[in-house]
Length: 165
Image (cartoon, rainbow, N blue to C red):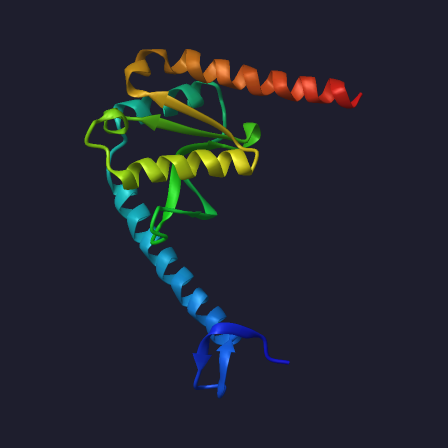
């Protein structure tokens, strides 16, 4: 049985071929994946910002395992060309951390940048992932902010456990 799709297919001599649509989708994903790998390589070659350096220092001092520039499948930028990434991912606390530099609060912030930030927030909410956004003006309070968030996550787990008991 041949499944149908919107576009016509000369190869299979029918219109609406799902096999061809799946192939087009696969090629698009491979292109996005390649673009994302190239961007990741460029980011890895660049230095960390002061804020990211401070977040990493705090996470290291707390002996937490984390991943830098974490991507999740299905989280693409506003036009679907590259995977979005979070600055830090702390898996044991199911926590993404974003250090938002001054460009996040600039009047020159583009609609694309706003859309990407919104998509990251919604992805976390939809997938029950904790997210912490740290504003650049709070660089001196990073340790306090992270500890508070971790305590909040711990308390939520405790409350959930007590409700189940």
